[in-house]
Length: 153
Picture 1 (cartoon, rainbow, N blue to C red):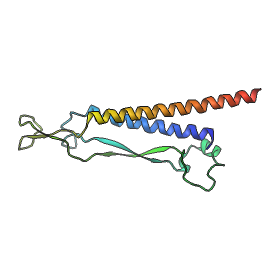
Picture 2 (cartoon, helix red, strand yellow):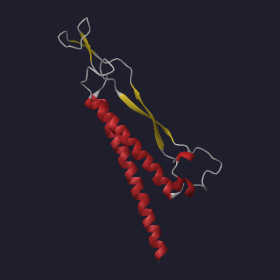
Picture 3 (cartoon, one colour):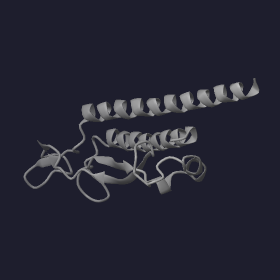
Picture 4 (tube, rainbow, N blue to C red):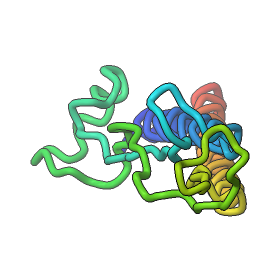
């Protein structure tokens, strides 16, 4: 992979982790939402990722990486893309609260299936992944600057 291919792969990681953090933030914000427009309690959402194909890499980075993977193998380092955002269909905990307007006929209220602790762990993981991609981009930028300095001398 070329230097610009590495930057492109890390940039796709930044975009993916940003989306993941947005979805996690939405889950945390709706941790107490018992009524949604679709009806029922809020259902946790999560992002599904998959590796990018070589043809999805940016044109410039793809051109520079053309000498690598000539046999069109799907190798590591091509980046990642978000495929879809899915809803976790598991039922949330039922709480007996007959006075709540969203309680069923038996007096039970379905709470959202959002676990705040698990969401915070996911948020920390996404944040660290984002930081790792920023570090990789900065390292590639530093290598490019050193290469330009070598060319000057």
